Length: 306
Image 1 (cartoon, one colour):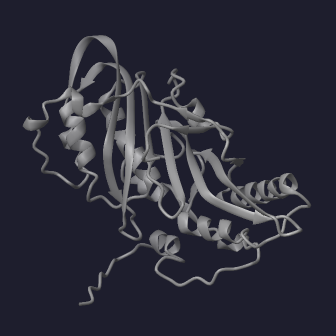
Image 2 (cartoon, one colour; image 1 turned 135 degrees about the horizontal axis):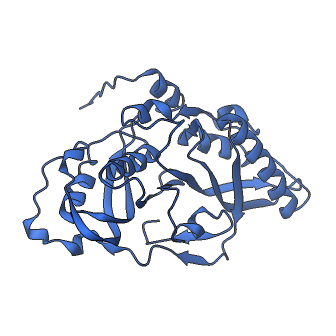
Image 3 (tube, rainbow, N blue to C red; image 1 turned 90 degrees about the vertical axis):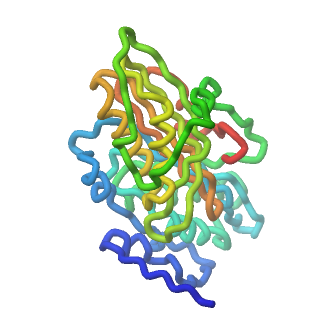
């Protein structure tokens, strides 16, 4: 039995789906034209997020686990490529286009030795992505011997804060009305982890899984059971990783005081050899929890799913 799914796409999604569901011939030639930029603002407008007055700052961190190229003598060079760029950029890079672009290095010869090869590749990739996204993109290659730095160790599983047997999850489309808050006398710090975030690619409709980390410092207490219900409401949502992170941030931001500290980070599980780890935080966010994640020279993890 053949099942046909018809998906209505807007112009942005059509552009993002340039290569999706199509047989793309592999190339043995470096091909920067594979890259596709997708505008951020279309989704942001739905949630009253405007690029001239963002309620956050932050980075999009990507890990490409299968980057490879050749030296001039044909010696293969394989590394984990880590990159980041600002959430203030007007565009994100579409992930399959990035994969195809990086794959075009596989049989391309660059440099007389391994270090020269990596230097040439780095220069090309930073230039091509910066030109495509109209922002500064920084990358680094990390070898297999790099230490793994554990991050978010202070963050507690939010399910430990509630009585699981009393939870009743019924909403699976993004539902900010599920969030409940109460005022307290003093500011408190909250460190939460939820390891069952699921959303779906807005173009392919394939599921994406990740861990979300939330920190805030406020007199406002957002009830933990309501946060769980809200995060579960993403299970049938169709958005890019970066969009989900920003939506979660904005919903929490709307409940807190404008001077409160807030941070939301989503560490997504890799798909197609690439993972995307967006982080958004208030200008006054003072913790160093995300420093190693943002640093392109470090390999930072939180759990086995990453």
